[in-house]
Image (tube, rainbow, N blue to C red; front, side):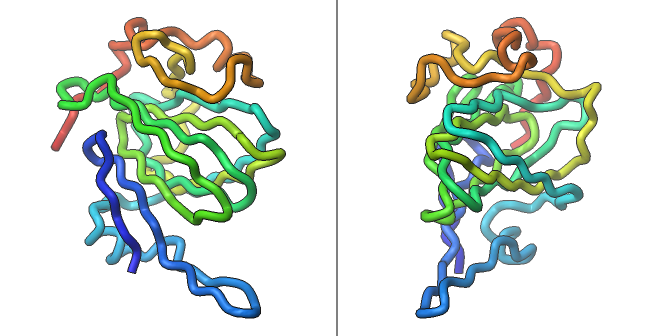
Length: 185
């Protein structure tokens, strides 16, 4: 059975699935609806995404509103430094962040609930990143927050990442407060 670990951010859950290894390789369940529901991940997933990124690429911090997306994320090749930031109005963890390493070797997954910013930095030569979403992508609803916002204070293991134009120009959290959703325990 998978091990579900609550983090410092309510609803952000680290999943450590059992990996069955033998001489042929390995096998694991990457999602099982009733088991994940019992572990605290109750949302229904409607879209799967897959990205490939080179070393030092930083994607994030992203969310969308309206139509916030919960995400169940994992790495299938390489490694990333993964970050979540609670920006739900009224959350007891508002402004706090949680970081972890996700890799093809540790098989960890992270559930990011709707309303929580998400981003990652590729720390291997290449990373293949896959994730399930609780809502479809709405480009008009997407917004970003600066990866290096001093009010959030993430200790990224890089000073000059490779960024998209959107992430390079992302505003600070204080400038997007009108886009945030309310915390619902």
